[in-house]
Image (tube, rainbow over all chains, first blue to last red; front, side):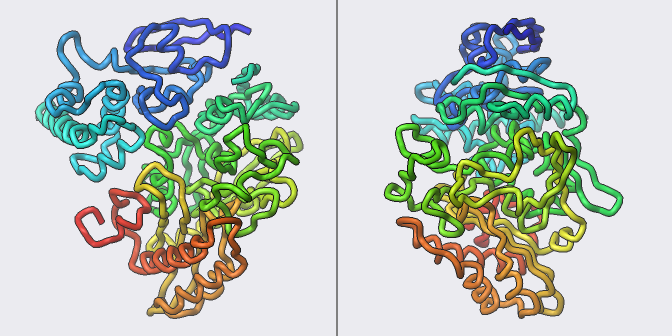
Length: 165
Length: 350
């Protein structure tokens, strides 16, 4: 049974035919759209490496059926920079050494972008640690990750203030 | 993952008809079901996708002040709904203490209610498990069982219900609206989940094809908004199931408890309403002695199902702490670490 779905991925409309309903959003992104920035860690919703934004909300793409997301707007790590101009969260991760091996980093960055847009954590390190608990880092770069999220949050808050002025 | 047919009906009636067939399962966000399917534990032959059924994504305040929440409202959306969190702060805090931010964004109210009661042996297809394979035995009984049930368990199954959300729902008399092939019915959340008995493979009282379409919180439960709490002990501070949890609500006048609500999580195959404890609290002084008597009453029938006798004492301490915090008043903002006992210590994050 073939299923036709439409998705907007990083701003680009895609019409896709699924020959099997078992395809997760993660496998669709990696194996069919060749967007391999989104990582497969545990594949069971425990590690957060596969985090992407769907309609602006961060989710685990390994636990979402692509067929169920027909019509959805997806943002992956490939879509956050503007050309060579990094997203403030990406820049802050580099500035704060918020990674070592880098495998969890796309998921960490997408989760941080989601966290900041949710507006619940602000620059409170305790709330950031709690809000990022769905993203594991086996290298243990957590201290740098929290610092990077704080800096990016402040940067984006300043940008919002300047735009409003 | 096994092969399955995927259908996405447009109406509740079509969904119920499609899901009444043997082997069919409803799919909401899939955060529990897809995990079970990837592990070879759930093997549905058909998925009936109800995630976008019209009209199930609304949070409504009804004319009498009660709340009606569509079954496909997301956990995070509900927890951050200002009106809802103001009326039912312990429920919002319970939602935010469960799983991770990614899972809370995806997971739905209806899906949370119907996630499987489970333990690690249920997930391990090499182990005996009466819930997964009826009649195969229970590997947990002689296994690693320090996190298992202390109330309401049977020789066939000692797993606990993992939901945080369902604990305050049970305390505050929430009701689910159910559609089935014979029409609509309503039952309390307390009556939705089953104890294992001899049939642990059935977690709930739902009949094949029945679909939860909405959750309602009665207006009477809003009386507890000023003094309610959800408290949860975990083996790590975030993103972990409860070892033991408690939802408590108090109405206090002139130092006397007028009415109380209390339910426990992590102790049984269903969220556990502690009615004997509530009866002990009503009319008593709002003090430690009353809370301790209530805690003892709540655990009267408890017995270890393995290396988990410590949970009986732990549950009593959590009850006393939860009642103490509830009596102090609901905090104006949900703490940085929702439901954590560490959040209740005095300090900048409290």
